[in-house]
Image 1 (cartoon, rainbow, N blue to C red):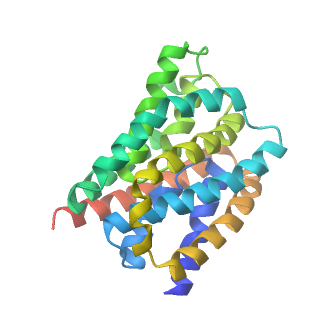
Image 2 (cartoon, rainbow, N blue to C red; image 1 turned 90 degrees about the vertical axis):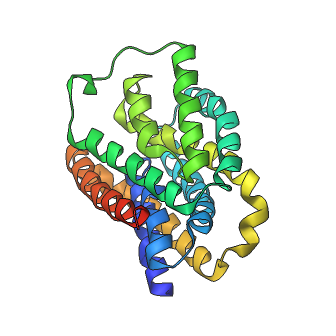
Length: 246
């Protein structure tokens, strides 16, 4: 089981460091299907792993000057109440429902990556009301599904707030860190059931992967990285949706 945790952790770190999100989209199914966590345990462990890895990745992007601290803080703050509320609700929902919702979110994210349209060109910066609404929606997704929300944060920062892609990736790690920690608070009492002998190594390789992911993404075009990740997301979405129907 340890080798699987190390491999999965590295993949999660690569996604977070290179794409500014998507770590939970890989972490949750890996914890459920490879490491035999329950859906509830997996979402809680995912928040721990993603929060830690995002904070480390944030430092790397901050050193490169790719983090909009004020914008990211405002965006994340708007999502805190929704993340905390949804995190409390999630603990009382059936595992099949969480799996189905997760599959739907993964599928929509993959479709958005593979089917660029006229709205893929960043527009002008949005007002605080629109930014707050987007942040609140992402906070709810984070709390309910145990995901950092980066797979939605990056597009929102680019298309709603008009940040350049490189800065959107760095800033998204700030948003993910804040949202993940907020969603984790209501679940703190359940962390005792987590197998730390698995989560510890998983997190360690995820941190290493985040540093590698940042360098890896700099060598590939945005379109290539995006397509590879979108295909992986479609596979994950299909697997989890089929499982939810059982």
